[in-house]
Image 1 (cartoon, rainbow, N blue to C red):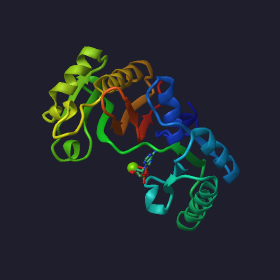
Image 2: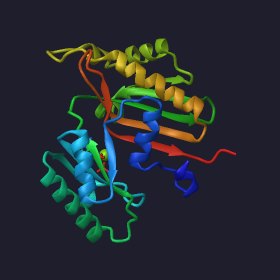
Image 3: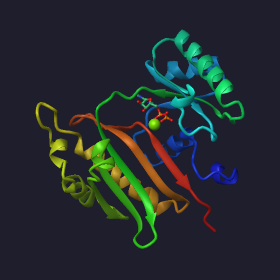
Image 4: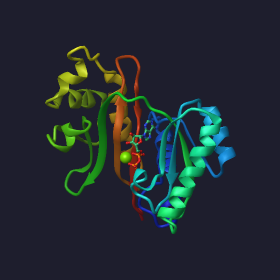
Length: 228
Ligand code: ADP
Ligand code: MG
């Protein structure tokens, strides 16, 4: 694993997406561009609109340094956004090592859910599920299972949270694609069983689309460690 060889414990964003793709997790289409022309090529192959983001092991909050541009819709705007991000980073974090600029499919805003995993010193690998935003951060409304998590377990996790009725649809909001969420939980569990190097996974947010339309991971954090 490249990150470990370089002494990093956090995968860069494109490494995280590449990794999750191996496990057939639904990540947005993406490519890493080193220059504005490559950025245009990637954007065209993904399809507009796209998002551009700085990729650097030295930058944690990309927006804070002008490292993210969303809703980019033309070749010309891709070049402009690329150059703007480069300039912002150069002036605000001059010493940052830059791997490139990530060109990413724009994920439409929808109901946000979260799937996470960690290695508990007592229970071993565990997977967590909850709804995004205040549901997890303020209300701590989450469900947990010890790995391996079956589809049946994952269904139960969806039903166990206090706000589970939101997933079934309420007040004109349509029911969510439960199967797609169950899929993400089970695959996250599989990553934890199969890849001992991974210590933590944080898929936050995942956009949960209406029934039949799937779900997509909008942000991912993957932490790794050396395993002897
Ligand atoms: P950071 O948190 O480091 O500033 P993020 O990757 O979270 O950077 O991007 C900042 C914001 O841009 C996100 O909170 C989200 O609103 C938006 N965003 C990022 N990537 C996408 C995407 N692929 N599709 C839609 N919106 C996105
Ligand atoms: Mg963010």
